[in-house]
Image 1 (cartoon, one colour):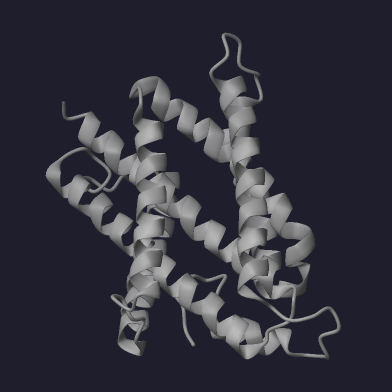
Image 2: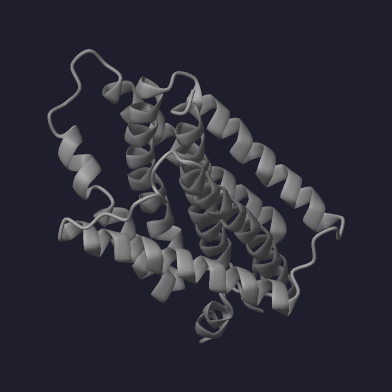
Length: 248
């Protein structure tokens, strides 16, 4: 079993099978409940930071939070990825930390393009449920070639984003792809498609984990991985809509 989501891959089950599970096994209902809890925490944190960001006098630390706030969620995500047993304790921390950043970013986009956040949320939810229905009915089957293709595309996008960050430190900008021209729009559309298809692999991971009788803590781990993909998809949709709106 392989998934391009770095937090959800076959090596996780190998690490999780060390020792005897004493707290039960992973179930679909349990994973759904954990996903709902993490989503609620993220939305709550995002709503709080959104409210502060859109107030008449936003806190002075908001600028620093946007610049350095990603470090804590990233650190927590890395710990969870390498030590899945920490997911029950750290996944909620990730959801809260990431929610604060998502709320600030959303407020910035909403200030410039009124109504864009609602559109992005609706599209994200629509894509989630559409792909879930397609997966459950067998319209989309995550074959090995499908998984390898999404893995390669996701890895390529991650390396490209990392390269642009490093180049940006030296004042070098990548022209076209991040602008609102048709090349930039096409690039954002491609990233949105890849992010969306990662959801299919996440569904496959969850189904196989439940079938394999993975340890109970893997419910939190799987929910965390699915949340990572959903946040990525939402932010990419937000970026795509902003490019389209800026052309009006």
